[in-house]
Length: 133
Image (cartoon, rainbow, N blue to C red; front, side):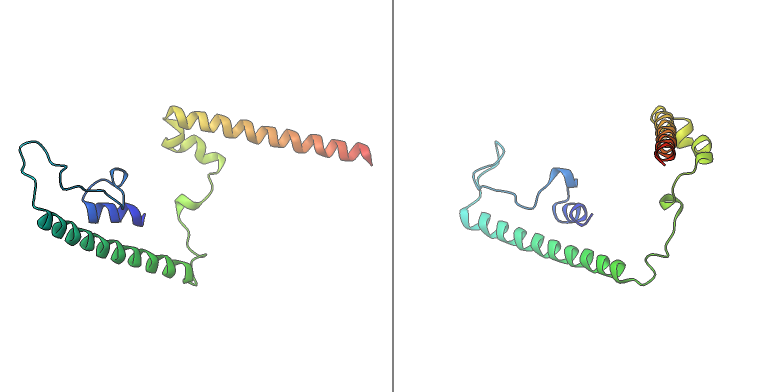
């Protein structure tokens, strides 16, 4: 998440379009735009690089500090949210995510078939143990 934030803040582009290292060459210009003098180009490049490094460092530090606060919070295991709770069978028929989408209904069918297979496997295991005794 920090890298996504860094790309947006430092580069001003979508995170998936960027990278930390970008090679720039003085002679790589659009047609019609004059080539900058070497000293001006390298000065601008160095200034831009230092600015980006400062942004990278600041945001990485901030992200690390947030991670440490979460990791060291004594009440972190007490946190609960509806999104973290397991889905119960009654919700699989009621929630729009499962009821109205094709992928959701496919997931419901898959989950129920897996549950049925687990029950059958457990029953077969019990029968084998009962006949072995």
